Image 1 (cartoon, rainbow, N blue to C red):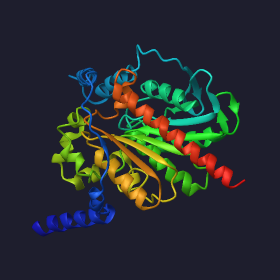
Image 2: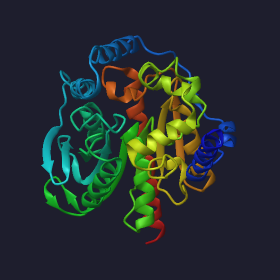
Image 3: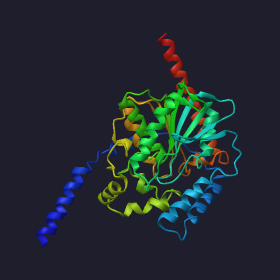
Image 4: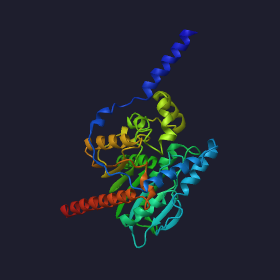
Length: 358
């Protein structure tokens, strides 16, 4: 009996290392990065209180009921804000057009919301999409990709791919080629954003002019040091995912494979582990206190080493995806001013390139 059990254990161990071959990326942690070292504004305390409300929404609930409570709470985040954009539903693909007054609808942004691939919607992130439409002078399409657990992880990926392909040739008024296109997303949606760029490149499609990722998840293997070191300083992700640090990583990898039906080492689920060459300019924003900090740092370092242009801009002690608290939070306004400057920079480079080739 002992030998049977030992053989089974050895087989599982060997299979684990065969299926989940993890690239050693620890050398990327040596890369330096700049940090905005100003102290959090007074309004940041209000943001922390809102996070407590989010956690209280799920107290006493379990399973699907708890998930539905979280989804409902997220969808209410933009309630009460004075949003001046037009919000127009779209059924194929599913999502919502966000159109600032007078914006150029030939300029388009695909926005992919976060929510751990199980929550969030175009409605929950209206504060972000409204702001993006204004600063980019563009029509934003916030895709409502299919969520887990009702659907498979890859269903959501396919929805994002189809939305991008459609957006290149369609605007809010109908068919018409985009003159400028940006892909943006936060957290889980940031992961979809970065994975989408690689898919566009490999598919030979028209590449986006640039991309923006707010606190992206880039590595589902949880190998980055901040996944453990920043648990206590991350008021959003720490209470929910901090317990994973006590579980052996191979167990997490198998659980992820079972839940996502895709290996956590796949570049589709973990863009950090893929080919990061020949990507468009990317801006990543992250906080020093969040669990996903090193996911952003490692992605930026590896992509730049591969020849892509990735800027990582880091704020001190902000909550995960603090940009969603615009316009109440001054640091969120700073973040969007940073995004606006990034967009202007890539447009200037594009104009210079066009002049060179004419």
